[in-house]
Image 1: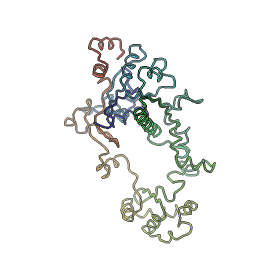
Image 2: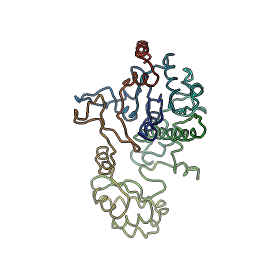
Image 3: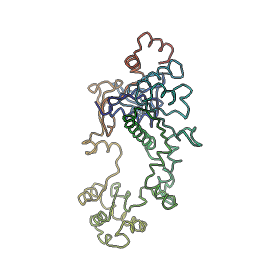
Image 4: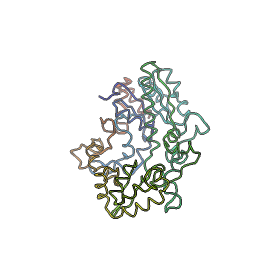
Length: 406
């Protein structure tokens, strides 16, 4: 059933941050109705290749990007620029507990789908708006995208090779992490609002912004600046506060060392055959190692190249020193721990055929919370949802379809 199986979510969002929040709520058991544009749907349905392959091994129109953020949802198509479409969304909102949207500030007000309008017909509604910059401030009306926010919000000033190194310069994170984190914060806000509704009986408006989330998630790096007034610089894979805590070359690749305390460093020095390092006043404490990283890091690099990555991993794990390889995604999903935790699941998808019909069925990353159903198709549930939820008959559905409202 799931912890939220008694709740209905109306998801008007598209692309990633909003859909990610809706997906989590669906994973936790909520009924999620995703409203998409007739004919095209969510923008990410076309963000390919790659696309889902059908039973014959041919690419469909279902992009992998869309599938990453829209499982456990019933997709319906409604054109709410049309008055009849607006009425359908209002009726769904009246029967929902949570609404998610990521339109520009004021974008839904023209259709009577803003918070104040819907609150009037459903005072218990929890209405979560996700924008680039929030509902207030000089940037409020600007569009916001993850890459831009990674730059404007400071993350890219910390990510990339250090000045003076080959390939120096800012680099974005390889996943749209600001969107993902915003989806998570939006979910937390929704759950908090649900807890408050249990006491007050009233819904709430939640204002979530990508920039706010990005700045909040600068964490220790933000505090490094706020306590000193000195902006942190890019260090590549190194850590500003811990040494050694970065990648090192091996005989056949690379290894990541994450030495978090002085006892772990002593163990590492012993495995490396460099026991005097542990008592050297330049390296004996973390603060000393940070101050003398320019001396210590090259010395470690000279040692690590004489063993393979797996030889280092085996020896260091046995000694209790945190470390690991740098895996590509094929190695990630075949890793014994990933397999044991079921981090990928095979599911049926209507376009892919049944699991028995295809050699390589639709495989999805498992959510860390729960997993229930496969993702739906564009418009697959429109008639069923509007019939079951709003009580619309076949004749009315046909009229709406003829008018291209659904």
